[in-house]
Image 1 (spheres, rainbow, N blue to C red):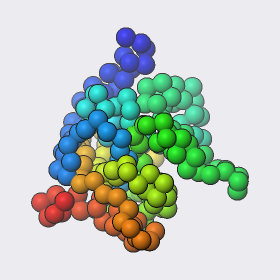
Image 2: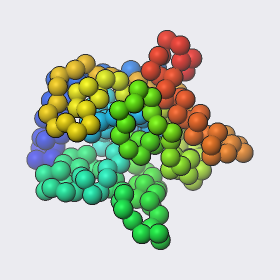
Image 3: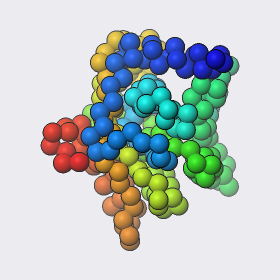
Image 4: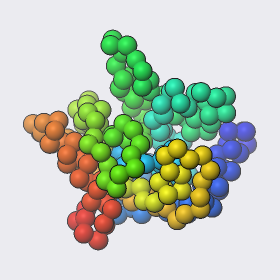
Length: 209
């Protein structure tokens, strides 16, 4: 077992101890196929929680999106995101000729699955902020990859924005029904539908997913 593998096992155990990391597959089942998971975003632990909720055999092919400036700002964070989580780094500060989706497109072309947060930034609000256009453009370019909406519950109370010490709290990830870009669906309608699919999972008994 490599150091990265041992660290992954330790982090998974710690995350489950602190959060429970429960995964509820309501609209789909865990399956070894390429997917784009998209979720609400309220904490640095969000993508760790999704990673822990996935079956072990799916983790190696499922890569989170990480802000390069933050997650490479120290040797430890850089090593964790690169070696343990195999993150896809994106630049939040870029020149006009840089395509922010290029690293994501490269990963999808390579056959990887992705975990993305379409709000683009963490929020303390109960509902996610309006989604940015990245998810729409990925759906356009990769129409055959299922898009899986996810609702992450309670993790903002484990590590609120601005905090560095996690507080034990039972958390869960609810995975909804796959969706895709509909023929002739415009960007605004798609992003509103995708956001609504995430919000609906907050009340699964009435989501109809």
